[in-house]
Length: 434
Image (tube, rainbow, N blue to C red):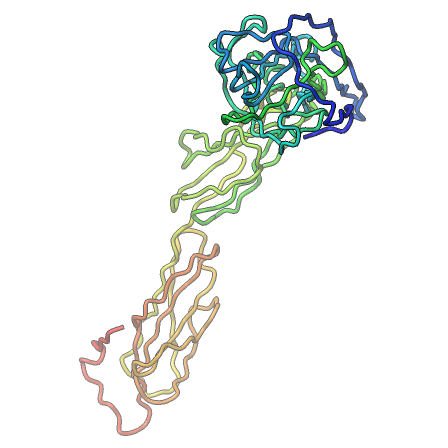
């Protein structure tokens, strides 16, 4: 991200910085740019740290050290000696300048451009990555390039304006301050396609005020108290996939950095479900029907205080199966246009919420009769003589729905008008295809 607070140089006056020069870096000390006390009584500081080491390495000069030169980036093809791919190395001293328990709110590596080739070039993408081993700015070469680790996800594009450019190193600086990562500095690489395309930045050896710097905004909370987190209450019964949520607060004031969530099934061993996450809810998928689940959570704050896991904080039982329902048997034949139809249902989980029933006449289409009813029986009025089939289903309290299968569960013949059907022993055995 380009900044507008640096001096501009007309394109016609630009020049290529000299190579292979010997000069010493002026002595510079960290500068406090801002310090204030927050309404909660914590001290917030913005500090500027000058680079304590910087240089570049060049692929076509693999054994040459360039300490003292400007900081080159990209690919060089125009100089007589052809430097090839160029990468920058920088290191800043955070130890002793930022309290170990401080929370890093923001950290920016700032470099001021003083040369661009081509002069009218489009912005050059860059990558910043952590170096994993020590290097000496007076000795390091392309052949001695330090091992490097994770690449920062927030990238910076460097244009051709001679101004300040920034790289976000908040997370990495936080790791250096907390001691969770060794501070061997960073490496920045640009476009290394074989072409003339490079940038040069002022190094720490410059005599002006455009030297490389790390600007860090941090808060010293003096926070020694761990956060307090609770898993939100769950319904007594849930479906196979259900949402678990949690919330917390940090009495020490530095704020919650991440959560860990565990579960156990039927009182067994605790199992890690989510580790080091920043979200406050998630879907627990593929729960097993009839199993009892418990959950608990803890958090780590931005000062590194970690809450201990405690007792179960929320529990539920998975009800993933629908109820079962059947229409009770009917007499084989009736001489009345009205008769009572009853049904029964069972559910091993959340319980039956309601019933739906339907009927059909003389093997015709099914017709919905009782919808969303809580009763288990009622009077049916026949339209005319004939064969009536009945089927029922249930839906439980969390929405699991039994399916209609199209197969009669009870059948009755209505015979009110003469000539009458004479009841015979075979009538109860009437069987039809669904």
